[in-house]
Image 1 (cartoon, rainbow, N blue to C red):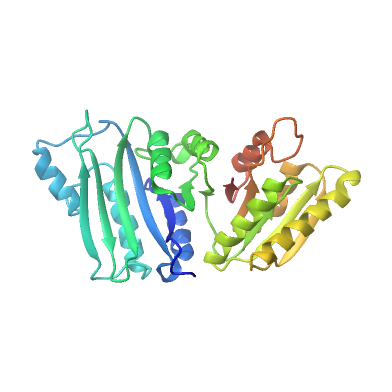
Image 2: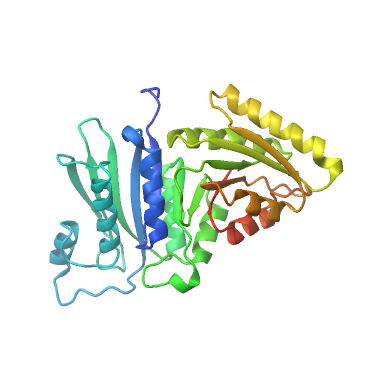
Length: 311
């Protein structure tokens, strides 16, 4: 990678769920050899479920930042940090900086621990206070200029204190200005199933996904759906164009597949065997194609594996 380029930034939303830690493992793979900085984020609604247990808040804050006292979000972030150590992504000797920001109406405010190694690579653990979890995540995305955001998708039956609700995940996906990877049980070695439609935005998204896939050494499989036989030639043509664009950007495509049928059904069925189904949000008024928002998000809701929306 060009050392003059800014470091790639990955945001991982941590809520204590297994889906969020699955996403963290994938983030480590994206940032191999510290080619990406990671931020682990836990968002706590303003002054909710917060009890000092009789401690003075300055003492509680001090203990929290040394990973002692159990306060909302700290157990989840601590497990994330421990995983980074276990995976060899973070080692002893990293410099540690504590950052605190007072938030009106909240006893603890925003807190972060930023770890930096001798080469300048960074790992940040943030506990943010926000009027809502959704707003906090979107604010952080806007501030951090992240190349990709990873957020877990829990089922309603797995809900519990601190867990990000499916409706929140969907809101983040729909409003984020950049790629969002929604992690379920995220397999790491089965490649990116990149779906393209007949728009230029889809071609651009395919190249963006190729750049992300290259970070984790994931193969790319191109796919398109024709709704009927009359569209088959057009679907084959767009796959060819996407492959050319990816190759011109310096990446490779393992295979290209075109099928006929209902787009949502075909994408979900064909995408089951891959690590990640990748869709471009190419919503355009008046354009009746399968990546209009309603269909893209239907795939996201119904798919059993992980999905990334690129825009």
